[in-house]
Amino acid sequence: MPIRAIKLCRSTYLSHSLIQLSLIHSIPSLQTLEQSIKSAVESKRYEQIPVILNSSEGSYQYSNPFLFLSTYPHKFALQIIDEMLQSFIPLRPRSHLQMTYACLLSHTLHSPNPLPLALAILQRTLRSGCLPPSQTHLLLSSAWLSHGRRSQSVCNILLEMRSIGYHPDCGTCNYLISSLCAVDQMDEAVKVLKGMAAADCCPDSASYDAVIGAMCEFRRINDAMQLMREMVTKMGLTPKEGLVVKLMVAARANKEIWRAIEMIECLQSKGFSITFESYELVLDGCLDDGKFVLAAKVVMMMTEKGYIPYIMARQKVVEGLASVGEWKLACTVRQRFAELNS
Image 1 (cartoon, rainbow, N blue to C red):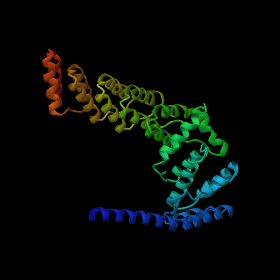
Image 2: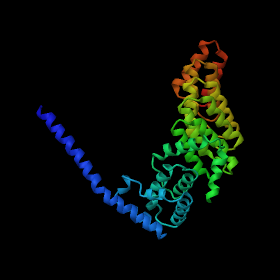
Image 3: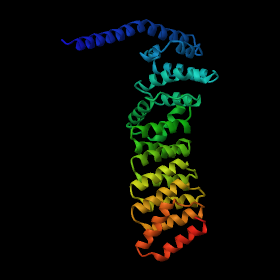
Image 4: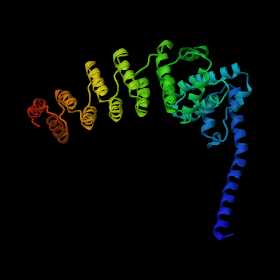
């Protein structure tokens, strides 16, 4: 065997041995950690749990320290977790609760019946200013889809939180929507969006932003436009500038320039201010497709707002209009530029 291969084998064997040794040494600390938390639970000294976890030097990464709760009857475990969550509310600084909430949430999402308890833990996590672990998106969406297969409506699932003393809110629902979008379950995310109001939880701009943004990434322009229109006209919400830009980018990529212009007119009619970047994207889309008359319309919309297109775009519009015999319109556009001292 070559010397290099021998060294590689020895290195691999050494690394494997070190990992095994690390796991062996971690077993007593894991047992000690779980026992310490179990003792705190049995004595109802829940405020000690964050301190125990934060001083455990990451032992919880090998096994969830709340695993012992799965041996308790469901209602009893539910009562204990609720008491924990309530006892954590006055604790400061809230950042010290990060690991505790993360472990509780993970334990619950891996249980046979994670909802609605997982939503309650998620709510307390978000309200404390802590961020759930990244894998929560996948676990939560899986739990939601599994729960939904039992032919329950979005409203009923959300209102199950009331049965354990909690109420659905925008923050919790928005995280759920983002989780579903993260695993490409946009249709299910739309169902949650539509069902929030029936659960006494009206969607906000962030609710629509998550779904529309995901639809733009997959170029589902018709659905995205419809939701944007609903957001503005029906709900009276104001979309973020970045979301409008994202929609215009997707519309240009899909060559849906007419739809993009209609959306801009809709937003303007509701008093929303369109940014130069959004106008520029639509104008470039018109020029890409050789729709010079439509480009002239966009130019007039821009100049009415005090925006002046870049010089290359201005030249392309005027020259394009002339090339299709729209001399009068070309002169009107050129005159408009001159009035703005361009």
